[in-house]
Length: 327
Image 1 (cartoon, rainbow, N blue to C red):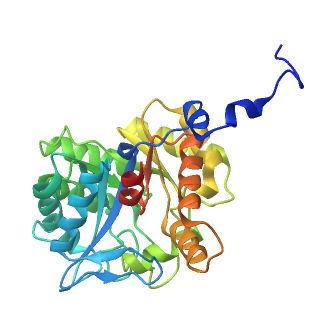
Image 2: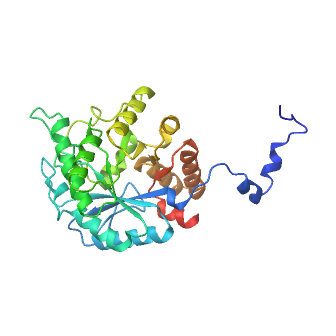
Image 3: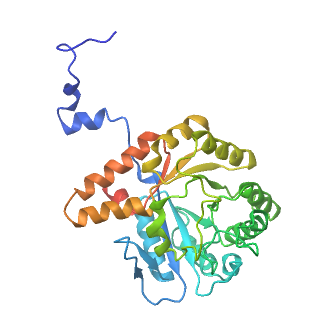
């Protein structure tokens, strides 16, 4: 039984910055952070993303610079999203060996691949002219199994371009197994899979769709992404299925609105758990700070500490380089 007031005074351990730092139960490290980066084909200068101040659609040259800066700051990883000049219904540019994402993977590996984990988003929405995450049926539905074939081909193309990890984000049933089989058959058995296992049909994704130019031209993604009001058991089932198919790490996306889910997934699994602090989370803090309503730096750190405390081993965040420098 612990002592009670007035003998017990918890404030004693909060009296100074040094004391608070010493007893801190949640610690961020630069290697915990993964920086999402966008690269766009056919632009001469980096293009700012209006809804995400400080985030850019990069040229290949500016992408190399951003990768170098992240590696120099000690950031653990980069995840690349490619925006091609030409899109079609099957996302042909996604697995083109000379497509923008594959070129970017080679560029970034040459620039910083020895000091940072270079990975790729393995999906179709940035590459299709309809903006959906897979192949469509004549009625406009996403064809799950036809899409798996495309994901498998994309993952192999990414691995051959030097992706050190692939990250399937489309929420198709069986996507991890299809990718694992394809990677192994192509001689890339050592490439791990970071599975977007728990990804919600979230309003927090809005600014990302501007950055990646992947807004659906009709409908939405609620037939394959999870319902925000869905049961926790559904999230855990998705995680178990991905692990059974060969996932090496799992992800919850978004982060702040789903801290409870991060905690339960962390309790459930014995692999690394990632959480994606998504575009809407970033944009809200930046907008509030720009209006003078919040202390920007404190809010950034508080949000990341909350995600870490909930159980995330890895955090995808657009502030990765900035925060890593501060740490």
